[in-house]
Image (cartoon, rainbow, N blue to C red):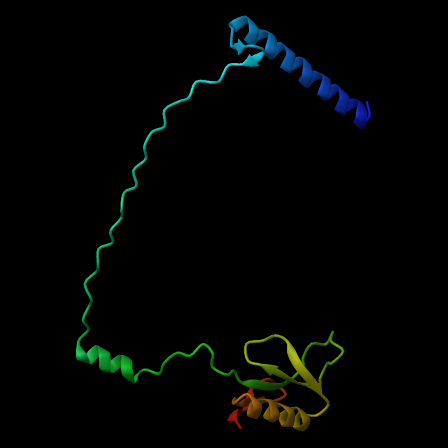
Length: 150
């Protein structure tokens, strides 16, 4: 049976079901003058809304020593400018194998590749100056040659 055949069959079944329901309701006497009698209205229950009151918590007072210790700690700044790292690419599968790269601290994405370390340092210094940051220079083996370099 194709789409239209199925649709017609459903429509016919629905009409037959409605006809049966009408016949049953006529037998029960729920039809008044050819129209169904209005359904009885159920009484609505009143709903009351309870108001929630929050209790105020007492303010905790810290001793002066604890306040002084917290004031001495350096504030943690999530928006701190991250350092730029100059290192050599060690991935043998990469097109840029053994080329010097500049990356931002915490990122796996390389900003730019260079043939020499000097070119990479110069570029990283430009970026660090523009973003009020510093650079970290790595040796060939990956250890740090210079840190906090501006």
